[in-house]
Structures are given as structure tokens and as C-alpha cells.
Length: 476
Length: 139
Figure 1 (cartoon, chains in turn purple, cyan):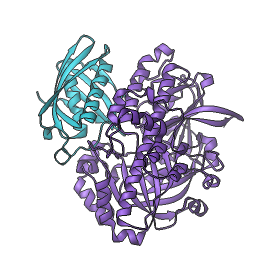
Figure 2: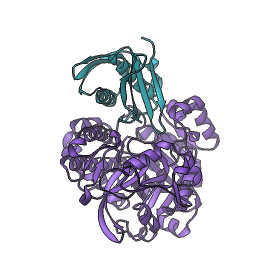
Figure 3: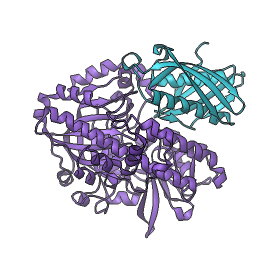
């Protein structure tokens, strides 16, 4: 991206001035190197979002922002229903509520290393992963409706996990305002056999060790110590979310004119918050959030079974569960006034600061855990939401490294089997049904996650708490 | 018919593009590009045929509908397809797709396609008179 077209407001904050129909400015949070490496399309997309009705304060991009569809991935924007604000299917993404959850295991590194191969094989056997995989349960329509209304709380009620898990999930594991009736028969059909499946692409289940602590008090509150073994799960709302995204993207694009919205680009498909289509999408999208939460809850149950098979002392307790692709109603203070806003985060993590009432009591003084996904060979990070982040970007932070090269380039550059062998040489065990998938997801195909996380911290969006390094990765 | 599909660059996802002497051929080739985002089409046997019907008066939205119909069929039937025959009719299309159930060992499928997007969506004739049909698909 040509940085000469931006105004550098602070060392890690760049402004796209509001012009050419932009209602608010665009703001990019990143180092100079990260901004320079971003595609010009990111600037275009941030500016386009700033043209949508009812947008409040600014159109934001996180340090890992890259070219998406409609909104950039790593885009954050809040809309006020009282000012004609909109909800956008492209501003949430197809993989609704894709996210990461991290669990303590009560297994130490020494114990893990004794059984690392067995654990990798057991997890791979128990966790359905990859294209065409199906879950253990098939949901008939009535149960599907219950799941869409109940989220992780529904899953716990079905015997997948424990009631105290819910405390450590955004929305306490159940997104309110879901409208299962707004979810089409096709979306339900696509999900029927996909409950408790990991998916493919960049989704994974990873066993990790805590390799570094940056903020001791926050790490202690999060229950993280050096060489602790943790488990992270990255996946989303599976076929159901994809189908909802697909259907509403088109419907919103084709009906925008009818709502009097002049789209700067049809991929910014949106509908007024206060319209039948806007309300229907919100109801369906919230149901998809519940689907993602239920799915990660079932996967947690499967992981517990796998750990229990090998380690009698294993006790998988939830650190936290975050969602990346959402639109949520939140209260934020803007120019001294408390306002009820619809905050879109697409490829961005909610990162509420210390003291926020949404946070569980034990974590509240330290801010919300922000779980940043890695890419097999590279690290993952645990951050904490900061007070300044609440002011800067509606309590939001980055979500991962982001791709540095296309799948096609990665496939030409790496061979899956060699990637697996090289990582095994570094004591990182990969289990995947597809070697082509592994090649496309090679660690080198991603940007440097440390640079992204450091930029998020320097920009004041979140505080670094701990670094996690992979030991076992089940890849879809 | 010779291969006349390509993938074009998109940072996070994949652009699929088909070209042909007719709109129908361009749609068939774009569908092959979609398949190739998941697995090598040459590994997929044509053992079963399924029928697809989409309606949309706008050729660009018709492309999105066509690709999304295939995404849906791939996901719910757990199949991959390697041959397509499309007939464009007034306000829609009818098509056959030939393929087989996913065989992970043989197909080595890399990603599920989540859906076709409106990004880089173009359906038009180029200067040489060839039809081009393209968009980005989310993987």
C-alpha cells in the first residue's frame, strides 16, 4: 500500500481521510512495514466501508488486515440504528463466528512428551477433520432448531462438556436474539451431519506449550505458566454459517437499491438494521453464532475423551472462547455519549478491556483473553483487551497472521509430506487427511504473527500475555 | 474440450475464471476451476451424474448461483465433480455434473469452498469475442 496516501496519526495508527463520499475516516492500526505490505485493496475496502449509512466514528483495519470481500478481513465497523445504520453479510463473512478456544489440560510438558505420538494419533482418530468428514451425530430438524437457539449451552445439555465451560465463552455460550426460523432448509441440510467437525483450510486443533510469558499478573489470572500444555481449537459454524452467508450476501446485494442504499461496491451488500431483511439476517447470523459455539463445544468434548484415554490426570478447563466473524450489539461511549451500536468484526477479535461487565469475574480486572491463531509451525499468542483498545476500535484486536501468499503459490513452493517431515524434525506432529491441504497451509505461507501481535500491542489495542508453541496439530 | 479455466490471485481466497466460445462453456470452465480449488479434477471419476437448475435473469448473479449450487451439492452429497454440461436458457440454466463421492486418499481435497462471493465478479465477452466468467470463492 502506498503510505503517502495516508496520514500517520501515531506510530501505529494511519488515517485515510474522509473524502469522496466517506462518512467517516478510515483508520489502519499497523507498523509502517505492515501497512506497506498490505494490498492497496485493503485501503479501498476500508474506504468503501466508511461510505455505508450510519457508520460511527471510523472504519477500522487491524494489523493483520488483508483483502477480503466487501469488508477487508481484519475490518471493524460499528453502525447506529438510530442513524440509519446497516448490517452487512459481507461485514461478517461466510464463516460466521469462526473463532478460537483455548483450554488448559493439567498435563505437563514432560508427561506430554512421553505420549506425544499417541496423543496425536488419538486426537486425529477422534476429531473428524477435512473435506467430506461427518460428525458422530446427525441432527434432525427439531434438534437443529434447539441447537440454533441454545449454542454451547445446548451442547452441554446434550452431555458435551460441563456447565462451567459456559462462563468462559463469549455470551456465556448462548447468543441471544437467534431466530432459528430465519435459517433456511438448505443451511440446515448442509449442517445436518457436520456437528462436531473441524472443517478444512486454516482450521485446526492444536496442542501447544506456553513458551513465553509477557505479563505475569494477567498470565496468572488466565492460569498460564511456562511449559504448561494447552489445547486450542480453531473452527467456525461449518456448512450452516457458510450457507447463511451465501444466501444473505446475494439477497442484500440485490435488494440494496430497494432500501435506498447506494452501494459503493455490490460486495458491500447490506440492509438497514431496522428493516425486515436486516432483522432476518441478524436472527440467522446469531443462530449461526450458536452453531459455531455448539460445534466448538462438541469438539472440546471429543478432545477431552482423547486426552482422558491417555492421561488419567488430564482436566481440560476452558481459558476462553472468542469469535472472529460477528456483528454484535454493544454499548460504547462515543464523544462522551453512551450509544448502542452494532459492531461488525470480520477477521477481528473482540477485545474488551479491564472491568468490562461482560467478562467473567476472575478475568475482569485483566481484560478479555484474545486468542491469536498460528499456522502449524509458528506460534500463537494470548493477549488481553486493553482500556485504550475500547477507545480506539470499539474493543477490537487482530485475529491471526493472515496469508502472505496464495494457496496456489504455496502449493508450487511446498510439498505436504516434506512440510510434515520438517515439522516432525522440530517435534511438531501434524496429522491431516490431505497433504495438499498441508502444503497450502505451510507455515511459510503466512505472515509473521509476532509482527502482527507486536503491532496490536504497540497500537494500544491489546496487551501481550503469553506465547504458545505447537506440539501436535490436527489439520482439516 | 481443452482446459480454459484459471485461478486468479486473491490474498486470502481463490479467484475462479472460466472462458469459452459461449456463455455456457465459460460457466462449465468456471465450475472446473471451482473443482480444482478443492482437488485435482483429473483424479475425480465420472461415476454419478446430478442435475442442477438455477434461475437468475442477471448473468453475473447466475454465475454466483451456479457455483453456489455446486458448493451445496459438493457439501451435502460429499461429492466432487470433474465434468459439467451447462445449457443457458431464458432467465436461468440447466446443468449436469458428473463426479463421485469424496475419496480423501485419492483426491487429497485441500479445502472446502464455503461459497462464491461477489468479489471480482464479471461475466462478459472479451475483445476477442470469448466469454469470461469469474469471481472469488471463499475457502
